Every structure is written in C-alpha cells, then in structure tokens.
Length: 243
Image (cartoon, rainbow, N blue to C red; front, side, top):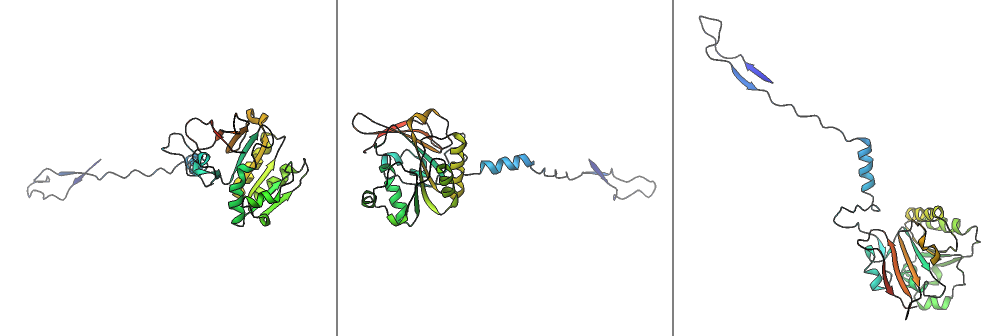
C-alpha cells in the first residue's frame, strides 16, 4: 500500500504540481499476535511436570531422591537413590534375601530426621533390637497389623496423608488398579512408598517408578533393576547384595 504526498508546491499557471508527487511507502502493519490454542497451553503445562521426561531432551529431569546406602545402586538410580513421592516395588523370590536390610539405611535416615515410618501388614514381627542397631529410631516406627482386605486401603491412606516419611507394604496379591492408587497416593503425599511382592509378579505391568528383582545368586543375593523411570539406556542391570 502506498500514500501520495500532496503538499508539493503547485504551478501559478496550472493546476498541476511543479514536481511529480512523492510516493511514500506506508509503514507495514504489525501482525496481530495469535494467542496460543487452549490445547497447546495444556500440553505445555503437562510437559513442565517434573515427572515427565521426553527422550529428545538432553538429560533426564532431576529427581528428588534418598540415598539407598549402597553406592553401586545409587550410581544407577536417577537422583542417586529411592525416588520421593513415588512407589518402589521390590520383587522377592523368597523371604530372607535381605529385602528389609535393603531399606534400613533409608529408614534410619528418615527416622533420625523425625519422619514417621509405617509398616503395613509385615509377614513377620519386626525385630526391634536389629532395627535399633541399624540406626532406626523406634519412636518413629509404626506397625499396623491390617487384615488382607484392608491392607491396600491402609497403605493408601498413610501414603496420601503427607505426615509419613515412608510406608512399607507387603502385598502377596495385587492388581494394576490397586498399585496405581498407591502410586498416586505417594505422589500426593510426597512419601517414599515401598511395596514387597513375589517375584512371580515381575511379568505383570506396574505403575511403580522403580522395580527391583531380588533373587538368590551363586555367592550372594542378586539385585536387578528391571524398571526405572527417567533412566537412560538399558533398564536391566544386576549387582550383588549382601543379605
């Protein structure tokens, strides 16, 4: 679009200007900014969530974690330990492989910081002298002897409440829906959730952020990472564990 400058001097003998009119280009109009669509805004909000990791990004998101006390295991886990506000699933081939000892350093750290630790329906009575020797503050330890029908509900309420540092739950039988509720409860409460399940459940789908397989080895129990949210490369990785 162009405009014509008609302010040029005109001739005394005619009606035409002495010089050709100056043609001045009009300044271009700035294009109106198009507001982002509602679905694009919603997608951006989802992608900013710390629990979302996009494979095309340079690195996995930082994870709030508690060291396991096992240097080799911490080196393999995002954040260097057990994920906070998430469910960690420990699949055990048989009792007595050190599955409880695996958690003792973390439980000691939490209870010494005056964080409540809840044991929901453990298969055996907790042995107080061994727990105290490992540094666990017994005053912060709660044992709930829930029935089989109330185990999931009890653990879910403790995870969701936000007043517990960690919740340990033993589930001989469970399905994806129940595990999903526990995972969401842990996220809501910002709690460390631990679930012990039989090794036969390893082939089942699970919403847990971390899944570990614990089974007998030639010289010592063998611990294997079979699922880990936010971890690059091959998921499966095994290491020895002292029972």
